[in-house]
Length: 182
Image 1 (cartoon, one colour):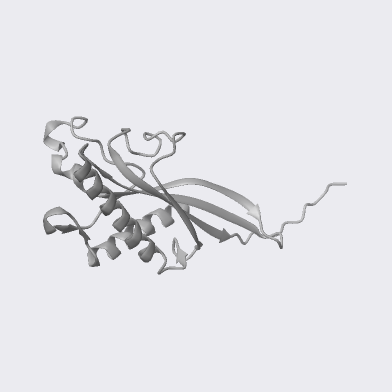
Image 2 (cartoon, rainbow, N blue to C red):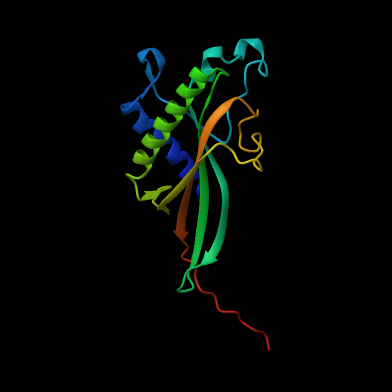
């Protein structure tokens, strides 16, 4: 069921961004590209007929990735399924200062809009999971995080922010008495 949360995140973000496109250089407006799991292969890693356009590198992207989870008990002993998701919001940025600064602005705007869209909803994954509205984010990948493991497939020159979300589901498990043979 946790994959339903990922699909619903993608769908709701796509809907939200189609109504509020991001401002880019030259007064162009567009929505970020959304992916579950990882970015598609970069140019040169696909056959020429399927190669990605060079301009695609300038578009903001949002990777939706499950990062961890656990099964624990709440204070009453009821089992709770906790599921953590990272939204990796980024842009491929050229080396010059001017392009990098534009990348920072686009990523920051994308983060702000994503927070507004996500906070509109309490329940996710066909209402099986509740969103914990205590969210955190940090700029860049920590030194201990491998870019390939995050779905980026390369280590530079990205500018990005990682938004951490948590979802919970209270499980209704039937109590089963154990029958002992005597």
